[in-house]
Image (tube, rainbow, N blue to C red; front, top):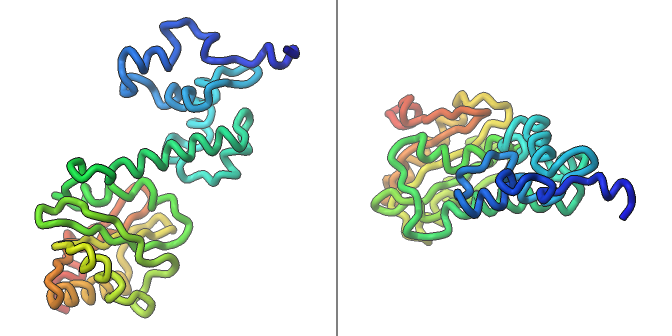
Length: 236
């Protein structure tokens, strides 16, 4: 073992009662800090830093878990102590957490408020560098059946085909739907195009017997419900 290897800290260098894996096994993952959870993923640290300290540095550098999520793979892997394998482990763990939400039918979330809908996608969509339009398909009890990405790129009334929005809804026999798209600028203020799209989707849904419950625009750390503001849901 070289001198540099000998100076690399591992979780085993911590006292047993301070080791994240042992604490997780004894007390559950909810008892650990974000830095400790990252430390478990990283397994080993680097010269002068334990894995938990590396995790804490990542959180400070990127502004928390949401910042790590928004960071590109290259940005993450270029950090000291983080190479391709560790960056991949972190990104994979975040993606698994995202997918878990909708995996089990009995655990599918029910949408009762605009905040419920926004919470499902805001973490991911606020990090996107281009616009995306997604559709939350709901059953008769407003439980999420599926989330479909319909458009990537500019979301405006001249490009969005309303038929595409309802295609998956009809195939999956959805009773209701919620449309969500993001504004990469971070400002979720609805545009005239957003209102026009909402009105077109609402009218088509009435014909197809699939009710549009809301159109939500996601920005940086906040969202706007067009239904709450009465935009596109009232007669022009």
